[in-house]
Image (tube, rainbow, N blue to C red; front, side, top):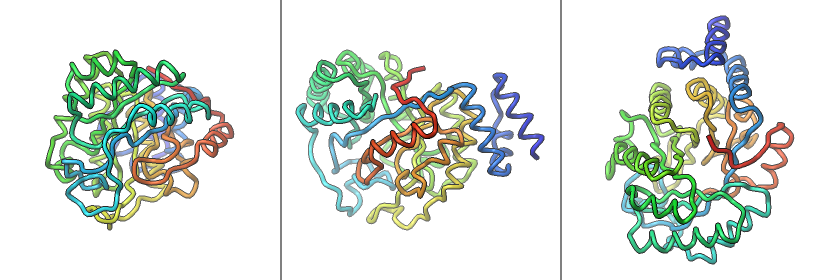
Amino acid sequence: MKEKLERLKKKVLEGYQISKEEALALAEMPLEELTQAADEIRQKFCKNQFDLCTIINGKSGKCSENCKYCAQSSFYPTDVESYPLLGTEELLKQAEYSSKRGVPRYSIVTSGKKFSSREVEQVCESIRQIKEHVDISVCVSFGLLEEEEFRKVKEAGAVRVHNNLEASANYFPNVCTTHTQKDKINSLQAAEKAGLSICSGGIMGLGESMEDRIDLAFTLRELGVQSVPVNMLNPIPGTPYENNPRLTEEEMCRIVAVFRFILPKAFIRLAGGRGLMQDQGRRCFQSGANAAITGDMLTTAGITIQKDMEMLEELGYQAAAWEK
């Protein structure tokens, strides 16, 4: 088995794209050898580059969608705070806070299926003000916008659009029924047509199989996604997934390592749920992951910027807003 792993690693290092069957076999490999091989692949294609970002919950709660993991859905009795789109002053303040602490990327994330025309205009003005006053890359997660709306966002100064696929195409209907995964893919492709880079990944621990996770990674590869958030479900009281068992750190390391084999050049980003890990993701950053969200998450506490910066320095990473 170790010989098979070594052969596959060498092929990937030479530019080979693995098959689904090979990825399924990787998922059964001894963990230590698998993660070491994945880290070698990361070092080959990404060196010590680490893409670090913060997010702000720019609009919270009362979401029309029924995503079963989400505290912001209006379908579920959670105690999440609800408020409309934040004004420029607050969005600018948080961008300045992140920039002063060395974070190179700042993402405005909002609840809801998509923005209204008025909200698009409002947030574009906020982005313009951020770009005028703060040296930071701006990313956005505004739901299912169309190409024309994304063009406005790009013209305002944003560089990247985030929209998670959440799960495999087969498993997605178990997670959400108020929109489809195809809707999300269409929106990502519209963002690309508008000249924006795209960021998309999924949530692990929704009840999906390892095959589902691998299928998701292959979909991301087909779409050419180079920024891939890997979230670990944080079961929120009141949501349908509140009693889902948490994944272990070993399971997350295995997922990250298999993703690295499938997506050798991507920035694989530890996102939601990292704060549940005892080591705050350190082992995953030695198993193929090379990006993260730092600071607080949307509706749960995260890890402080200072602690993350210290960890990255210890691991020999260089944090920046890397583009591919």
